[in-house]
Length: 558
Image (cartoon, rainbow, N blue to C red; front, side, top):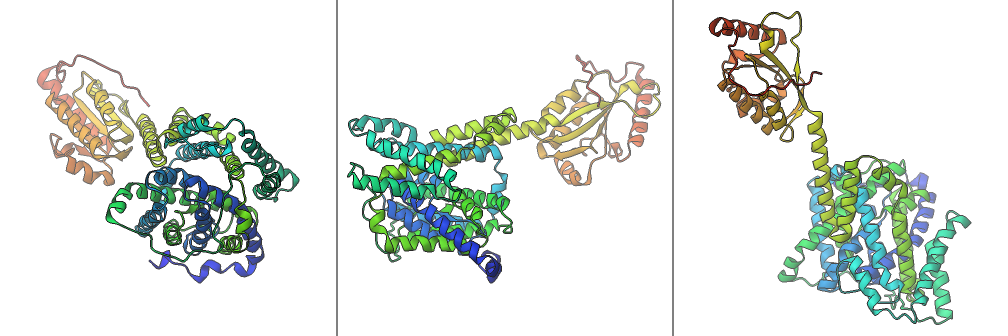
């Protein structure tokens, strides 16, 4: 457990990097402000909830997490999950969900489940990301046109429904604000690469909206101080109804945080991350956020990337980012309350568009048919059904294609007997098992061997078999038994030591006619087979061993 807790070693480089950390923290704090407000509003929990989450969860995850550079807070993926839950149960459940999901994530970290994210294939991750980006964009459509979201829990349907209640006489105003925000965010990097386009856009649009007294919905009043921590109201009925959503949120928090931390490692030389400690830190961050009335938190890859590019190298940068947001709460809530919701929608729409990498999409679509299928299915299920369901289905589809590929790479090959041929060798079949013999490939091997005719002895070479499961071992057993019932002697050569226990328990060895039919050396197996052919020919003539098989297939040689 000690490895899951903070230590002074986390800050050993601060003496050398503190200037860059402070600059990076200031930069990320400025960029995080509009995102925190926008995600809070979009989730239904309110702008203050997003701001509190960025502050509280940001500092707790920085101190207790397993990454030296990760920045945590509210994210678009979490908003996608929270929105329908808030609509169904009310905003009061957000803090409860934070506590429940945080506890689940802590347990996952304590059980050392952090490395499980490495089993998620790249096409699934990218399909998941594309789906989230589409949902975030669709969720902003109602605010962008000055309407209310439709009653549907599906983002696409709700966006379409929002057009039914739009006031077409005033729709040009919010749409113009969204377009202005998007234009400023896209042009800002051309002026200076470090210019925070989202902040500049929000300032410009807010000033214009207030000077012109435009008919736009505003964020509204925000708390001028952090609330006191308090335990949310709990009851057994509420907790039982929130178990499903809490598990979904916990899974999402774990996946997104670990993926973000893993990407951060590839972007900087700030040292490796501890996946299990990261889960514990993110769980504690969500619990702390819930006590202050905030949302569940995750690692945020966009803010983490900005942190790295701005010079952040230690946990101090993420801590400074939270301090900057605290300053906003105590010094600028009056100004922030006047920000139009359409401006926040514009920020999120651009953010969603930037989440989609055209180059990445082209790479996946142009790679293999199976990867492209996994990518498209994951994205479609994310948008139309559910994020966690999408990840599960994506992994299942990817696993299916992976198993099919492994099965295709495995095989059973008939070989010529080595050395100088002798009379009777045509009645000996030597088969080599290659690759993986598991449930996906076993039946195919059984069919190939059983379709060989005019044979007295079959030698099965298992020395090249890399993967063997119980199904594969059982098929070998059934194949030996079937051949022996037809009067064909089966010899097995080269069972690997790591497979010996399995084949013994499943019955491969006991299915042989005699234990002397188990060999380590191929030459000895061939010599034994020739002796059987000689005895069979002497006893029954030239046709001995032909037991009425009706089909013959010449198997490929390798």
